[in-house]
Amino acid sequence: MQETDSIPAGAVLDTWADDLWTNGVQIDGMEEMEKLIIQTRNTVYEIVVIDGPSGEILIRGGRRFPELTPARLTGATLGGSFCKLRGIYAGFRMEIDVNGSRTVTSPVESIGVFTAD
Image (cartoon, rainbow, N blue to C red; front, side):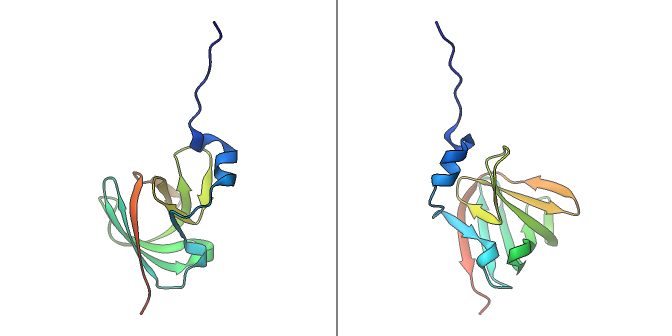
């Protein structure tokens, strides 16, 4: 009998390339000072976009970020080698860099976007 390996669909590059990416946001297309409220499985995060194209944000939430903390949003990941740069998507984890230290959140459950007005 031949042994078969099982690979999660999210780990296949074609899955990423073919996805319409309608279940989230790209901060690189957002205005400065727009605010996001992100509910992950374990934590609620408040994110303020400082410079979307560079991923520069302020983040608050959970034990890691008890107060607004300057950071860079690397993007959305399933915890593997693929990362949707500057993206936050339901079902994916956020990857955040603070002074060279990487934080990967639990999976995103919901995303709220609030304009600077």
